[in-house]
Image 1 (tube, rainbow, N blue to C red):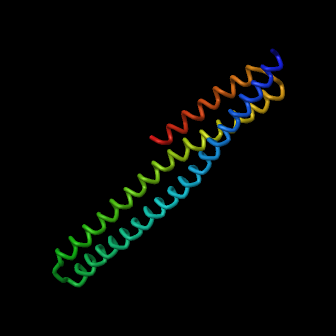
Image 2 (image 1 turned 60 degrees about the vertical axis):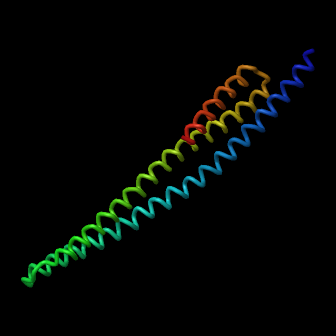
Image 3 (image 1 turned 90 degrees about the vertical axis):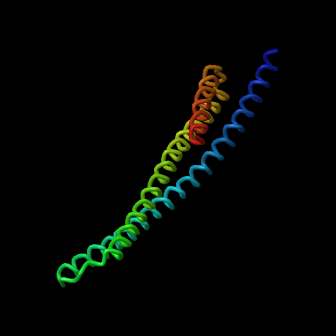
Length: 154
């Protein structure tokens, strides 16, 4: 009976370790993809903000030039430049918000991966020292990892 228990015990630990390793690999892959998305959206935000700054500079330069030279202000051009700059700033803000969402997702994925790795280490310890409490702790830690993995999907 004890021999059967040890055999089953090792099988349970092996299967659980394999499942956690797959979850850790998926989490790691998603973390990398999310990090790339963060960089892309931050780059987009900087690009749109840079373009908006350039348009605002044109707006101000036209206004100053008209005032210095005493020319009548071209309201249509000024309004067009102002509208374009505001649209570009709005696009920059949208890209920045997307990057922030990806950053939160990345944090959740990183936390999930860490908990999966800790659970795998605890399973290795449980196999070596044959303590059920260590196995139980690994299940709890793995559950926390699964929680953060699901949290990253929201």
